[in-house]
Image (tube, rainbow, N blue to C red; front, side, top):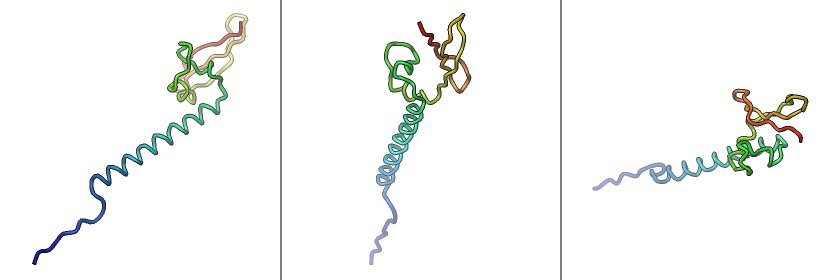
Length: 97
């Protein structure tokens, strides 16, 4: 008599497949939450051009949730200074012409 051993549960490839699906879901959820945080700021697309290269990249859009704005004086002009929440350092300053 031969006894066949039956394996219980998923195979390694099944576990890897579910892990990949979970990782993709987590990435989509993360990007969705970051996008909602960026949209909640109400900045225009021009304002979100943090490196001032003339266009707003996806990375700049997603990182907008980590950027605040404060009013500053530059000489006699009232300007808006965008700063990083993590260290308070200015990213860019926009003054009306």
